[in-house]
Picture (cartoon, rainbow, N blue to C red):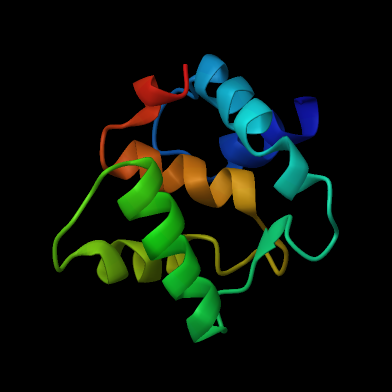
Length: 104
């Protein structure tokens, strides 16, 4: 948990919602436990589509034309980190859309 929290703090725009980080960790613990799924590959179009369809649309209930732009913006924000933690990536997207309370 401490590792996830430290990673989120590197990229979050404001104070980190620790309850939301814990909720995301609990919700995605199986995904985060596998080496091949714990990171987001921004260079892979199928991965970006998976984030849009499974997280933004299904989990957060979003729709609209700006979903891909928010994924690209998150990729750009995390560009310095070669291994983009899925938990941090999802936290930043949920923060962008004001949906962190869904995980707290």
